[in-house]
Image (cartoon, rainbow, N blue to C red; front, side):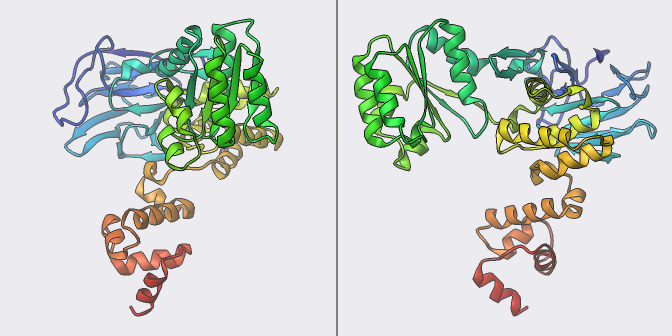
Length: 415
């Protein structure tokens, strides 16, 4: 366990990052130490802060591999930077050893055996014990949406749960009903099943205590309308529906009947993606491994760092499959495990240092594609965004095999 202490105050004159160096202060910025499975702690930072174990440091971090004067933080007009002050210790920013590198909200930082997430504001909201509700594992910052769901269940009010794939919507629905109202008769229906319409309507007609409809937007519209009609007649029945997209988008796409929005739109719970919960990933991974009978002991510092760098668009299911595959690979060195996780996890080129973006083909390809998308397919604008010439942009396109819109291909052939 790290021991974190602050010896003084600093101020940020950049206007970008909130000032607030004391741990007791509301807000503040710094690093959430996230490789503890039970507790999230904060490394509170300020302009000029020196992190280390010795007397010269202003922020004391007692952790294996941390030097007396390990790193310094600088705040400039264009953001915050972390500088390595010890050649022996080293600082890794998003997996790359750095002499001096910019950090932004969500950047993964490693010093010695400490792995954390850089946070630009409200650092105090991240601190505290990890929580559990059924199969859900969550940090202090996530308690809001969980308490909202529990409140709806206690008040016997039907509601919707929105969130990306694998974010824990179904687990939240089940756990909320069971914990807030134990003993209720619950019916769980997956709207993708052929018998979904009959199952939902039968459950509501029989006045089940609670009906959980997963993937509600995939239920036939006629069944949605009938379900709302039956719900209005079934006093005391709780309907909880999960959506894989925001309510407004489901309505615009014609996947959700307006009658559903009329009844449930005012009561919604939004579950965030795993990418926006990087500080929870160690505890989530440990819980998944224990549930699957795997030994969480091989979650080394390097593996944890790699897990936290992933974006996990497939959510919990994707994370579980990667963990299963790596463990099933048998006796591997730590470097081999890191490599396996890196190969399987999806990374965001937005969070990767430029040098790594250029060296890693997957990240470089994603970087080019993102620039093209933002530029509407216009080569000149995309090249300007990446600060390269059009000729250099075309060379990268050819090297990486990125497909251009047809008219752009003709333009390239004339150059």
